[in-house]
Amino acid sequence: MISIDVHELTKDYGTVRAVDHLTFSVRPGRVTGFLGPNGSGKSTTMRLILGLGRATGGSATIGGRPYASLGNPLHQVGAMLDAQAAHGSRTARNHLLALATSNGIAVNRVEEMLAEAGLDSVGGRRIKTFSLGMRQRLGIAAALLGDPEVVMLDEPSNGLDPEGIVWIRELMRKLADEGRTVLVSSHLMTETSLFADHLVVLGRGRILVDMPIQEFLASRGRPGVRLRTTESTRLRDVLIRKGYHPVRSDHGRWAVDGATAQEIGSLVAVEGIPLIELVDDRPTLEEAYLDLTATETEYAASMSPIVGREL
Image (cartoon, rainbow, N blue to C red; front, top):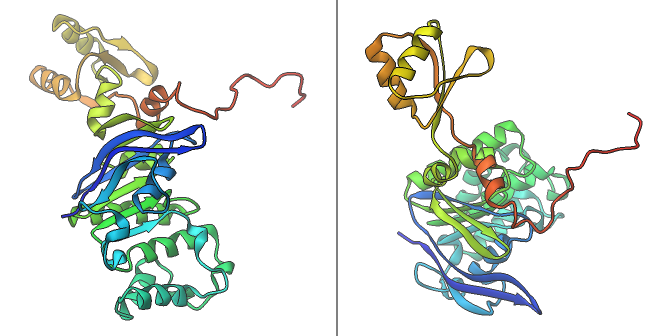
């Protein structure tokens, strides 16, 4: 299996350092979410991995080799960095046919990928007539055309409707389950939490996080649980007796800090207390990410209220 290995990767644009000595690996068999605020260096890093720019220092290899040295690269690496890059006057089918022909890929693979991307009925239409979501689907079809072991996607859910978002989520999980190496850049935190196994988070060109997603979430806050029962008084008494400090919250729920659902569930089961809700209460990926990157965001909108305006 092939991995992506980035070592001390650095990229300067004049006096601006866009990528600052990055070192991380993207391993096979899992989806790695590549996160960071605008201007954090994600797109630059992906371009450097794909040989679309020259690094100031360090290295980026795929299977131990620079991308430029790969033979028939589309068979090994599939990438979508810009869904708008396809020539608008070509049809979707001809766009994929040109890629297949130039990379020694069987022609029947074109029809397979049009069907996989849900574009088989519009394969004869010119790309300039496509919506953003349709172009995204075509870009993903092109990335997967060579059946590559490594897949790199930059904001693949942009412009997709709800069905398309579910499709790309399931597709990424399928690719990882097949043992492929999957790197996905995204700003959609809820979606990322549903498909990613591992996170690499950048801030101002530097690594902020490189760890499994569950480990990251656990590191950003104390564990806690929310629960509801039909026997609130008895539940409260049992929890206090066991050393917990339950707090009554909204809609009849109880919140217990410093506990897990497994611990509380086992306790109330022994006591025979019926539960109608029991969930772990941890920060969402969005909350944890915003907390982590609060001082690393180059472009941030002011959150002060609008005054002097009649609504």
